[in-house]
Image (cartoon, rainbow, N blue to C red; front, side, top):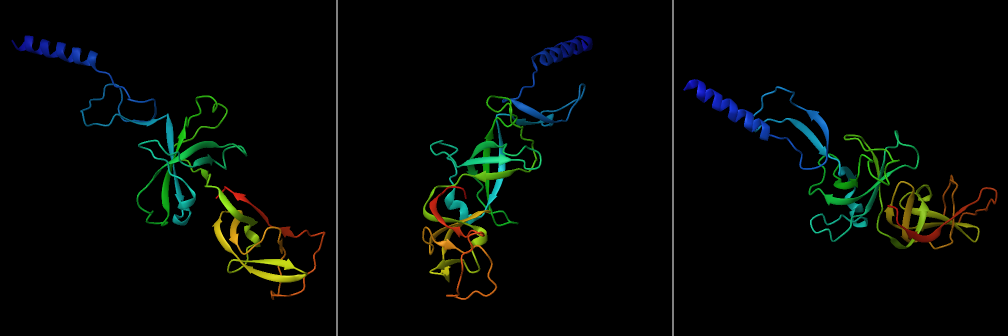
Amino acid sequence: EDVKAARAAVDQAQLELERTTVEAPFDAHILRRDVNVGSQISPNDSITRLVGTETYWVSIELPLSKMRWVTVGDEERAKRAGSEVRVRNRGAWPEGVYRTGSLFRRVGALDEGTRMVRLLASIPDPLAREEPNRDKPPLVIGEFVEATIQGRQLEDVVRLDREYVRKNDTVWTMQDGELQINDVEIVLQNAKHAYISSGLEDGAQVVTTNISTVVEGADLKRNDDDEQASSQSEEGNDP
C-alpha cells in the first residue's frame, strides 16, 4: 500500500509539473532572477523581477509655482492629454536626440526634501524596439535624464534673456538717450528667458551692458558696434 501511495504521489506530482507554467501578463524585461533550475519555491517566494517594456515612467520634480503652466493627463478616463515631455541623457546621447512622452500623474504630496511637486511622465517604447524609434537610444532603468516640459502658451508677454533682468525685477532701458529703470512683472522664468507681462513695451531698447553707477536719467550712448538688445513681444511656450 505504501508503494502504491508513493507511486500515486509521484504520478500526481509529474502531472502537476506538466501543467505548471510561469508566464508574465505583459511583455517584460528581466531585471533580476531569484531562482535557478532545481530550486524549491513556495507560493509566496519571489522568482524574478520584471519591468514592462510598453512604457517607462520618468519621475520629474517641478516647483509648485509652475504647476499652473503644465497639464497632467487624466489617466483613468483618458479624456485629457498631458503636457508633452522630452527627455534626454545629456552625457550619453548625441546632441539633439531625445525621447518623447507626456505627463500622466501627479504624486499627491510634496517631496519632503525639496518641497517640490513630483510628476510622472510616461515614455512609450522605452527600449526603442518599434518604428519610428529604432534609431533612438533606449532608456535604462535608474538613469538620470534631463526633462523638458512643453508648457501652456503665454500671450501678451515680452520674452527677455534672464541676464538682462536686474535686481528687484527691473530692466534698464534707454529712452531719448537717458537711462530708465523699469519695474516689470514676470509671470514665468526658465533657465534662459523671463516672460514679462507688464513694465516693458514692445520695441524698447534694453541696456545689455553693465553700468557701474545706476541712476535714473543718466546719459547713455548707443554703441552700434556693441548692439543693444531690443525686447520683442511674442508668445512663449517653453517654460
